[in-house]
Amino acid sequence: MKLVQLKRQAGDGDAAVVAAVGPLEDAEADAYATQLRHLVEERADLGLSVGTTDVQSASGDTAEPPAGPAELLRAVLGSDTGTDGRGPGLPEPDART
Image (tube, rainbow, N blue to C red; front, side, top):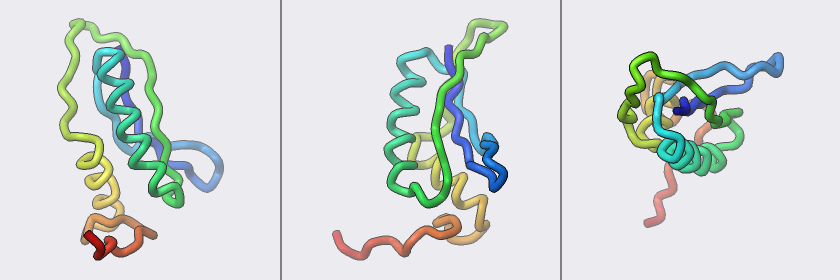
């Protein structure tokens, strides 16, 4: 089992976990982390990173992700500003369709 972690780099070089999802089965955690990583890479200027860590569940049960990767990232960025959900330093949405 694995836990997916979304981390933000602090000014001192340490990374703080800002969101975690799991525990998930290994394959499910890897897939979720890959999707989230692609979204984070599009916003590299925010200093976010994605990783997984092995965990053990006392009950052996896994959890369902509380939200998809895009929704999780929006929630984290929205909590940074408390307003429009774009987070600090995010450009205006592209008007092109």
